[in-house]
Amino acid sequence: MKEVGQKRSVVNCRHHVNNQNTNLTAMKYKVHRLDVNSHNMQEKLQEFLNSLRGEVITVLPNVQPSFQFMGATSKVNFLLIVEKV
Image (cartoon, rainbow, N blue to C red; front, side):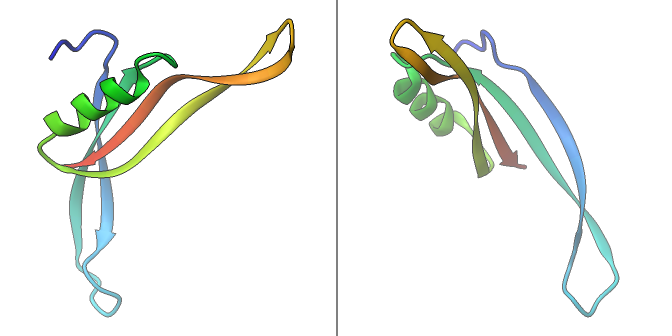
């Protein structure tokens, strides 16, 4: 799969092992950016999710307002996918 328009970064987070224990473990996450448009969003997302190795935590759309001749609307420019590695 081509990685055109996709950027990856690693985010380190601290997470409690349980509520009674004060030991902390480092959890690693990757944040992927997937550029999409309304014509190819489903296919690109499906292909990308199937290529991931880790667990998908969330998919966040970047929704931008758009003003057309028929009135105001919105569109999704890209998706951010958070993966737990």
